[in-house]
Image (cartoon, rainbow, N blue to C red; front, side):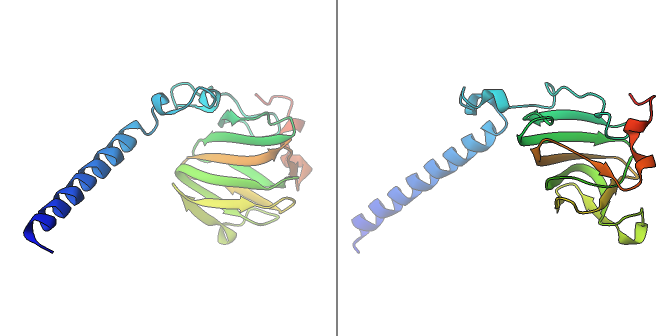
Length: 175
């Protein structure tokens, strides 16, 4: 390879590297930006500022805040929910008719496959942690310090408590 060919090759390689870096920087700066979402996808885009948080459904213990990200929990099809659980929040032992895919977004969630609350059976999932609670699997979840989680499932959402006395729907004062 002569000097002229080498310089041409080196120049082309440098330009390719600069173009690649610029494209990567632009893509990273647009992450989370509505400008990068097509209008067909805009209805499914949620930012923390526009999510509508509300009380949990009557089937879950009061105290947490919930937001429906996608779908209708009462209907057939994909559903994505977020829950902000305050310190000390517990969902007693229960099971569901469909798999739940849980991602911890903030805080720490304690999870166990058990018929009764047993700290020795728990696994602590911190931010970024993920697990699947399979359909009909007995389990519970709680947090000591608070947690925000995302739960993805195929609806309709259902929950059956192992101990009927734990079911908040039996508590008339649930809000």
